[in-house]
Image 1 (tube, rainbow, N blue to C red):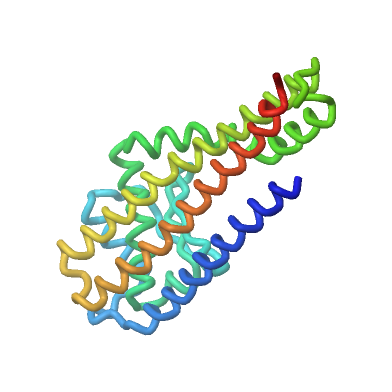
Image 2 (image 1 turned 120 degrees about the horizontal axis):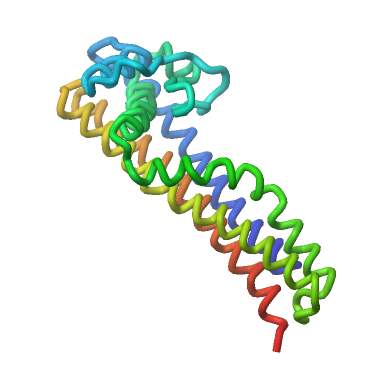
Length: 231
């Protein structure tokens, strides 16, 4: 278990560093005011309109960095610091979330796959590690009966969550690429504002990359514990 704690500690440290850097970047680019004077809400509504999307509503949601697109009720949810603000960071986030709405409207395959896995992951992710640990306690490492199969079930659940994390990567990177392309092609931002938006989205994407690598590392560790002790 010591090795696992070291692994988790290392991943948590990297995740914290990336998250902290992301917050610094958004704080920095929140000081870069848009020359067009548009708020995050207005940016989002224009991007949706430019893509012919008329059935998605832009709404405000509490919290910080809580922005997301909800495909179930077709809403672009912008945090209060994005919804009302008129800066490069707000423009980047608003356009990124609309990128997901465009993906949905165009039936982007990776988004569809990710959405299909959401119900399964929401149920299995919380219990996967406990199943593996329980299986090990029951003798999985020695290949003993029920414990082995309990642990294998936990690994399967963990693998699904890991796959989900990696499927999330193209979804997020594509949404950012769509956002940046639209901001640039429609001359929505100046060169300085565009650079800030691009940098902010780059660091946001890295949080998903760290999460995916962490999920894979954890899966490999527990798989080694289950299968490594068998003859």
